[in-house]
Image (cartoon, rainbow, N blue to C red):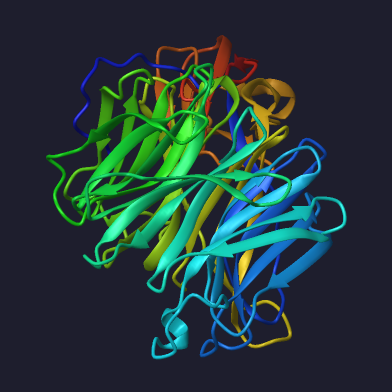
Amino acid sequence: MAYAGVLLPLLILAQSYTLIRERHFFAGTALHETPTCSAYDEEGRLFIGGYALPTAADLPDGWLVSLSVQGKVLWRLTLGGLGPERITDLALDDSVVYFCGSSGSALNHPEELPLERRSDYWVGAVHKQTGHLLWQARWGSPLLDEALSLCLTAYHGLLVVGYTWGVPESTMQATIFLLNTVTGEVRERRVWGPTPSLLRKIRPISGTGLYACIGEQGYKPVIGALDYTGQIIWRTVLQRYPLPSALYALHGSTEGQIWVGGRYGTRWCLLALEPTAGRVIREYIWPESSPAGALLALNEGAEGVLFAIGWIFSTTLQSPEQKGGEDIWLVAFAKEGKVLWERGFGGPQDERGVALLALPSGLGLIAAKANRFSEHPANADSWVLLLKQVPCSEIPLTLRTDAPSFREKAGKPIRFWVEVPAEYSLSKVVWDFGDGSTAEGLEVSHIYGMTGTYTVRPTCYIPYGCPGGIDLPPILLRITRP
């Protein structure tokens, strides 16, 4: 799928590495667990949050698990009461993992409200090493409230964003809270302003002291910036986006740009904004012919490569890696926004990529995926895929030929191929036979008509990275008389 709608000229950036599968595992149990968020700390621990159900017909409980990168479960928590609970976002500091979401177990609802529709703001803190719950706070109104995202401020506070249903209008209203990180006490409460609105994600903007947030306002996508108290500094409403457009992904790059993504109608979209006033500086929209889907998460890898993950849906398979239904879809962008490559993961069931983690060795992918590989019946689960970063110069490719001792007679066909380890794949190989002729193919045959010494040079292309191709060391082939 190609993108469209570029607002600025783009520079070509070569990605000098590829990503290969290093390890994958499921992080859940025999329950039905659905991941919604994830985080990674400097000590090599993965944290995945979401919700769990004993059976598909039950109400959910908040679910939080800590794992090593080898897939070992360090601790696991299921949090909740009689009502529905869901964890929607995580934030980490040195010793605590903070979570937010919604809880239906508080006492702020009229008795006639059905249990499954009860929802209050819910924020908590868990010790990173032990999994011990340090505190949790629930608050809200008699109507629906939900904390959707949170981040730590530079002044030991938690900024929490979400929505409430206002009274008496019964209209969705975006909300902003500042909490004490030690007790969970609400220090400040602010409302976004125009309704209907909600705020779905908040993240720090590098080098500015501000915090970017995304959501919807008046049924249109909106991006804003807050200070450390939750005061609104600026907001940008994307007026021309058609329904049902929405923003789900937010990332503050190391260079200070704000990257956001989601869907434009039913297509993927990616935008970049400058941080001081929220001006859109780049915009990328997949064409109408692309499969329907949504971009759900963004993160930054080595060399400033921006990775995006989400899902696509197509009734017509357009790639060997599409399996039908909803498929996990991963895209790599140069820091100027040029699409470098796209690929799918998964199987025949509906699957969604929900989070991306920048790891020292490469990239971590968290997805909602059915677990069909345990002794239990198939159940919703959290799938972790670790992709290892390998420099293009270190990919172990070997040129082979069936010419004995690199000598052959003129007029006789000679086969050439490239040996590739199982964890790699080649999209094409271009051959220069040194006699003015070339060919393309993973395995080729060539006939030399004249005697002499010829240099055979293959250039290998891999699907995901190293866009300029990899030139293998050439071989010298001596052709003798028939």
